[in-house]
Image 1 (cartoon, rainbow, N blue to C red):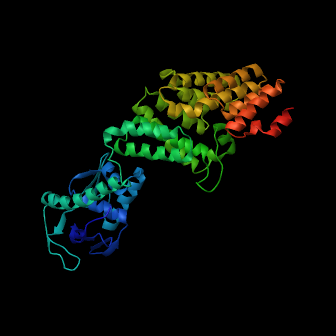
Image 2: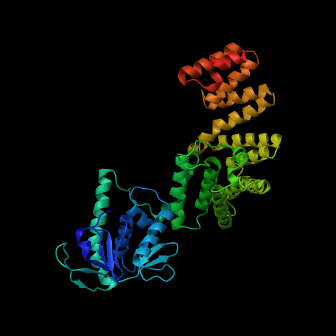
Image 3: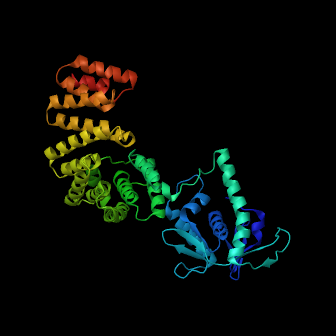
Amino acid sequence: MNTPASNTGLRVGEWSVDSAAGELSGVPGAVRVEPKVMDLLLLLASQPGQVVTRERIMNALWPGLVVGEDSLARTVSKLRQALGDDARSPRYVETISKRGYRLLAEVTMSAAATPTTAPTVAPVSAARNHKKWLGVAALGIAGLIGLGWLLGRGPAPPVSSDDSALLVSRADDYYFQFSRADNEAAIELYQRVLALHPDHAPALAGLANALTQRAIRWPESPGTGPAEFTRLGDALANGHLDREPARTQLRRARQLAERAVGVAPDSAATHKALGFVAGAQRRFEAALVSYRRAVALDPDAWGPLINIGDVLEISGRDDEALAYFEQAYAAMGRAYDRNPVQVRPWYAPMGVLIASRYRARGNLLAAEAWYRRVLTQSPLQPEATGGLAEVLRTGGDIAAADRLCDELMQRVGATAACTRKARESAR
């Protein structure tokens, strides 16, 4: 966000503003500010006395990027520090709860300011100056945004507060991909909605889920370690959920989930989020209560069904767990066509998990049936193909097992269950 040269003649309250130099000058002396801080000041000064929404500020300061409320809060804090302002008793920047920010100080500018002449500043009322300054700022800002959009590297048209449901849906899709990058994208989108609507129950529940998933799956900072935990039991056994920063993340997630349930007590999603946090905090009975409440509200809520099974397994109740996994798989089948983006990453792996549980119990007929069921829906799925091959080898049908592995390796590539070493060991 660049600013026109004429901004050199701008005064905000007691401060002269030199946007080109990134500097404020006043009685205390000259203060250098970061570009984003200057951009924020100029945006607020374009509408003195009026509320500028958080969404508009984010779109103007971080065009084309998804950022959280924390980034905006830090920028506002730095602006206040530069201006010598106090958030509790503001003279310059006022926080408008749940909406945005407003510039309180009088804004004046020279009638004609150039870099080589000292400006003559004439005070103007906030209402009159709004018209004059808005014309300059709007041309500069809107022109740059429009050019960036045409070139394909600027922001998309801003998302209005009415699009919160769309943003949450997009965040949910990111969350259900279960990669670190997608989870972080989901967190940013949920936070963006909550900046506009702090009591938006789906966003509260979604953010609680994403923070809990971050704590469970990725105990190390990016680039510092390869560890990733895909199952709650493994994460609990590792112990990192009992240490920082996971404990703080889970405390925040619990607060968000409890707030979500308070806002929407009849939502399966809010109870699922509360159960997810409880499980990560080792409060297993509380987790089961929340998950079962979610299923009572929505019998097709396959996520809570999976999580019930997970908690039951951790608690040593394997027989009960398997029944819930099978219910979850059936619910996923019913939900698949309605929401394939979220169901697909889980569908085949859940069927493989069920097959593996039967196989571990020595029930090879049930295991074979489940592997084949998965392959009917997901042909050449590597884990299901490898698992079926192992079951066939155990049953003595070596030729059929080899054919499965040959086709998998030719069309997809080798997997651990279908390597030559695995074949030889099975024989």
